[in-house]
Length: 181
Image (cartoon, rainbow, N blue to C red; front, side, top):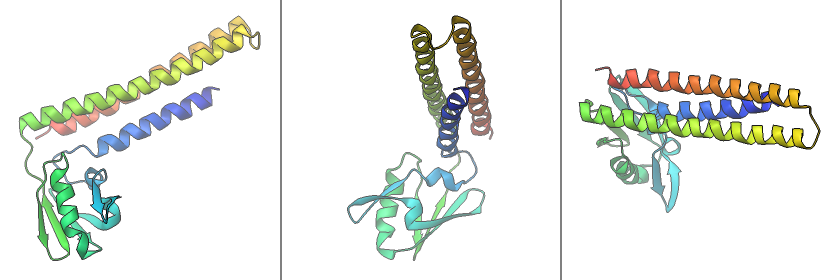
């Protein structure tokens, strides 16, 4: 049972890690663009499926678009994203230079980051609640003893604390990246 809880909580950590990788720092990272969805022939398609994304410089993206007909749609999707990026087209290549982050934008990103962390902690607590309910049900149905129930509940709480601390560490690390000029 503990392995099942740890697996579920680990998935929450992995989800948070992928979400915060998309938050913008002063360095270009292809993961920043992974959440951009492009309206391509009346269907939403991930930007990564329409272009090869590279970072030739620390503060620049280069998108090699596979279908020239998608360039306008990609530009539109990038402009509409909340990243505040401006694409510059050159044939089948789109260049995006990251503007410097202002202090207000950094603070806004930290606020978003903390919200993501809190959502992950809520998910961890929901997993804990479901598991403890299951343990109490087993105890009530006389499938396990009261002592066994207490031991299992303590193990669940230990896992919860461990994963909450991991979330705090991830948030703190990303926050320091965001606030570094």
